[in-house]
Image 1: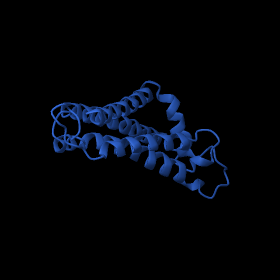
Image 2: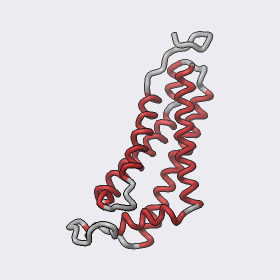
Image 3: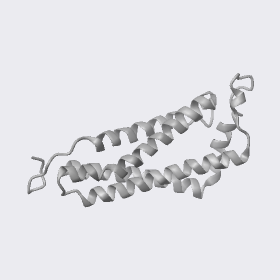
Image 4: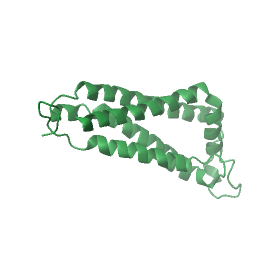
Length: 170
């Protein structure tokens, strides 16, 4: 039972983080919007960089991308909340039923990993060369988040054991 509760709590903690980040981005829109704007504009890397042609300086595109980031953060957080609630409801259930209730939590964690790996490590860091900027470089932060969400996903996906009448694994 303690492993099931740990899985539920970990998914819930990931949800709280994601929702807080998404809501903070809505309430303090400008601070992280500047990050998106600088990364996509590639205005903080050397102007003679041969990849500078990838820059996107259209403000509408910046807002659309930022909206997608916020939507992914909030969406992943909501998937994790609902996933954690479904897991909590099945905490005393047979192993197969508890395992079947993992789908939304897995989806939420994978959406978070996709956002930070594809969005920040691949698109921002490599396509837009974010790693070359001395400021507005979120590569290390993105990596830390990928690792946290990845560990949570691995732990969540570990196989379940049947519980005896006292709630202990058989």
